[in-house]
Image (cartoon, rainbow, N blue to C red; front, side, top):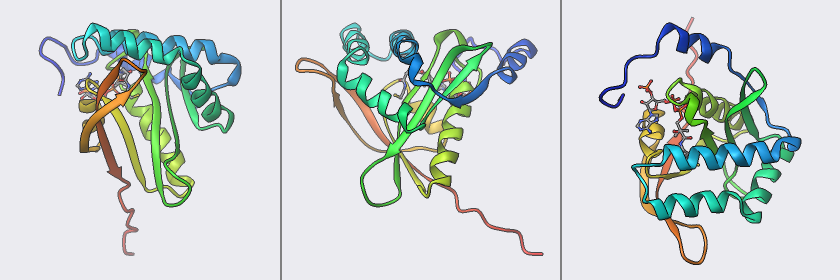
Length: 190
Ligand SMILES: CC(C)(COP(=O)(O)OP(=O)(O)OC[C@H]1O[C@@H](n2cnc3c(N)ncnc32)[C@H](O)[C@@H]1OP(=O)(O)O)[C@@H](O)C(=O)NCCC(=O)NCCS
């Protein structure tokens, strides 16, 4: 649902959304990726997370462990980037949840605050789900910080449980563990 006070996207906004191109993220753009993730974590989580949680989330994004995880999904071409005139405006990626089975874990779902609510997040997540599905994964999961849970609910994800995401020794983020099963495609009878 659109928050009170927000109007429907204008024609200009939908033209902008159409100009967005989605393709694999490149390893040369790691600093741009980290900057986008930190910016959207700070701005878009405001109001839903405490100041301390937002700072911890942004610090985590600049940690070596986070960079290594993102670099790995970029290397295996499982991180998609949305670009407008070459500028990075969003990302979404996935990884197998474990060695066996058909569960894919979504990660790195971030949209620039300047381009929020234009349908970019939805397009990125749908593109990632389609790639994972193509690779044989029929269940998608996400550890969604509060504030992003409603977005994933709109995309068909159900909350399996609530918990925390330990970011460092002193900070943890409240999250919803969410899950979606790919709809079974039926072929119409002739
Ligand atoms: C969550 C996020 C990716 C959404 O990106 P977006 O491009 O703004 O989302 P979309 O425009 O595609 O939204 C699709 C629908 O989800 C819903 N939605 C999106 N953001 C929402 C929010 N903050 N609260 C409630 N509903 C929301 C809306 O119903 C929207 O449709 P509508 O506005 O047309 O009715 C973005 O806000 C973000 O980067 N958040 C911070 C980072 C984060 O927490 N990522 C989570 C996983 S690591």
